[in-house]
Structure formats: C-alpha cells, structure tokens
Length: 577
Image (tube, rainbow, N blue to C red; front, top):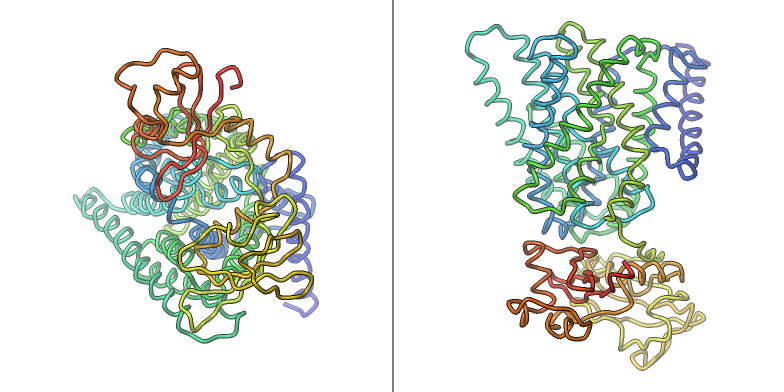
C-alpha cells in the first residue's frame, strides 16, 4: 500500500463519518431511524452504490462489528439506572431468555416452511434474528424526542442489552449441531454452551464490574484518563470472556450498569466520553455493514425475506412478548408497544456471519436474508415508534431539560463532589430561599455566588436569576438538584397540566371523599381505601409515573413517586381525557 493510498483511505473514512453525522439531521425532519440512514449511506458507498467500493471481508466485519457492539452495549449499561430494576428487571430478563427462545422457534419454523430448508437450518435463521438490537433500541428511544413510562422504557433497554447472550448461544449451538453427526452428543453440546455462555458472562461481569469500580476510585490519574480507564477496562474484560467462551456482551452490559450506578470521580466525563465513542461505533458499524451487502443480490430473495419479516414482526415477537410478560401483569397497551419495539439491527447481521466462519453451506443466503429482514424492521418499526407510542398513549409529557452544571470531584471524600448549578428563568429555584431547597441526605450548601461575589448569610438569601449555587454532595443528588434548577418552558407546563390534570391529590385521600365530591357511586368495599392503595393494587404493587386508573367520572394519574412510594396523584375529569 502506497503512502498516497493510505492518506486516501483516511480521508474517505473521515469523510464518510462526517457525512453520516450531518445526515443525521435529516432524521429530525423525517422521523427516519438514524441507524437506517447510516446503513443506506454504506450501501451507496458499496459495490452497487454510487462510489462502487467492493468490501467483502467477512472476517474484518466480524471483528469490527464485535468491538463496536461491545462499546455500544457498555454505553447502554452506563445509562441504565438501578432504580429502574424495581419494575423492569424480571420482565426484561424473561424477555431476554424465554422471549428470544420463543421468537427464534416460531420464526425458525416459518423459515423452514418458507425456504424449504431443514428444520435445523430454519431454526438457525430464527436464532440469528431472534434478539432485539441494543444499538437500534437505545438509539431510537433516546433520539425519538419523547419519553416513555419507566416500566416500558426500562424493560426495552434492559432486554435489548441482555438478550444477545441467548441469541448468540442459540446461534452457536445450532451451528455446532449442523456440523455434528447424529451421535447423541447434541444434548451435552447445548447444556455445555448454555452454562459456559451465561455462567461466565454473569460471574465475570459482576466481579469485573466491581473490580473496575475500585480501580476508578483508588487510582490517582489525570482527569482525562478516567474515561479511558473505564472503557479500556470494560473492553479488556469483554475480550477475556470471549476468549474463554463466555458471553462478553452480557458481561460488558453488567459492567456498564455497575460502573454507571456508582459515585465515581469524573463520572460525568466517563458518561460523555462513552456516549461519543458509542455514537462513533454506531456510525462505523452500520456504514461497514451497508458496504458489506450487494443490493442487487437481495432482489431474488425479496418474497421469502418479506414473508419471514412478516412472521417475525406480526406473529413471533407479539406472541413471545405476551407469554413472557403474562406473570408481570403489564397493561395491554405497553405489551403491544414492547412487541412493536422488537427492532433488529447490527446483532443479527453479525450473527449471520457465524455460519460463514464455521464453513457451513448457503452462508451468503443467510447473510442476505437476514440483512433484508433487518432493513424491513428498521424501516417499518423504526419509522413508526413515535406515532405508535402516541396512539397507544404510553408516552409521558416532556420533562424539563437538566441545566448544564459544573462538577469537581473531591478525592479525599469518597463519593463527594462540588456541584455548581445556575439559577435559570422558569426554574423552581427562582425566588426561592436557600432554606427552602430540598434537604438531600449527605449533601450541604456551600455558598451562593451573585454577580461574581460570594454572598454571606446564604441561608436567609432569596435566589435570583443568574445566581450560582454551590453544593457539596454525592452524585446521587444530581437528579433531585437537576429537577430544582431545570427551566420549565411554558409549553411544557401546559402539556404536563393537560396530561396529569389541573388538580393534585394527596395519596392518602380516601376514595369515598372523591366519590362524594364528584358525585359518582362507589362500591362500599372501597369506601375506606386510599388513592395510593387503590392504584398500587391495580398495578400489582409496582406503579410508575403516568399510570392511570378510571374511577367513576374521574381519572387518577400517578404524578410522582419517591422511594417506591406514590407522593402525588393527578386528577382529571373524564370529559378532559
């Protein structure tokens, strides 16, 4: 390779990344899934595209795809809050195991009939497309511009971050079964693969996560090195587990969750760095996968691919979701949405490379078929997520955007940092006294800066616009402080009022008092029942913000939950709903 050609490759790769970033603006106006944009750009660059670059190295694609996916899943774990596990961990893990198995079985049997291949080959196709894709789900939910109920959004994110091990396990097992003769060893192969994948992934994921947290706490490094240490440590553990035959994807998701939920030095920098790296990984991975396919080769398999995609999207996924969530009593609207959000992305395409690497036959057909199914999923499901959420009435009104703030870790105080928040127009902090600010355990107010001067006697001061308020606190105080100092736009206030109702009830209010006030009949059995107890019972002990129940002529909506307790309930007349 000449020096000039090397520079040309650098220029071409950087230009493609630049074009992809700029093209992402297109998604804001059209609602197109951003990952679809990257995929299409890759196809335009590829063999049948405008530029005509031939890229057919499956081994390089497999390597780079694994690296990119690991980074994306680690970032997804960092952004998963542990308090969402209260309502979402068990249902998400059920979807990630039984749900993937059921989806793969139904889709695989359909592929067996549609393609006229052996049952094992059909099940292999089902296993490859069986898991939802973390990159697709994380990206679309976070960039769609709307907020989901905690139960729904957290279930989707935890599921997509943890269901890859089951899909990989099924794919590898079926590839091995296709390579084996019928010598009675299939049962041992399946059991051994399952134990190794899940066992190593869980064990090293938890152990490695806590080890990495201790390193981040104890090592004295330049501030710019902490994000590098977090990512390099997670990727090292990912590679180690993959070498040992475990599920690196499950492990790196667990590591991300552990690191993301611990008070660490420069935790904000770790999150920002990881977000940027995950974004770059998505761009590179989907560009590469777009270049890897030859669009003209997809035409002969259009009908079977559309048929398999139809079974996957409209039959297999909804049935798997319904059975998986049956024990958890999810509202039917949320079940429908979770079923519709079974987006397929890079994971199935990369899994489609396993048969090629194992030397099986029909590998090109596997790859092209799976690519077509993913393309249909991104176009059909990805493009309609926001309208479907609105139609099913499971989205929440937009919350106020957390303001930018300064933070300085204090190494001598474990978990403590100095936080400086600006007082912005429209925030709850304006015209409040310092004494009226929330009393957060483990935090204290250091001072107030006004026009460059540190004020004295701050406890009696009334905050003004453009003040700066300093806190000594743990990182767990950030969500509370963010809500206090976040500016609320007038349109957002109107939307929140329209959603939750004009009236707020105390959760201890009795249903009989509400019935008397609004003039509707109430069953005597509920006369002494409180609003909180009634809502908790209706949602089987795990309500979330936005849950609502109808009672006579009114609708009761959960406005706020704190420490697993309902602290505020909105009331709307049915005529307003």
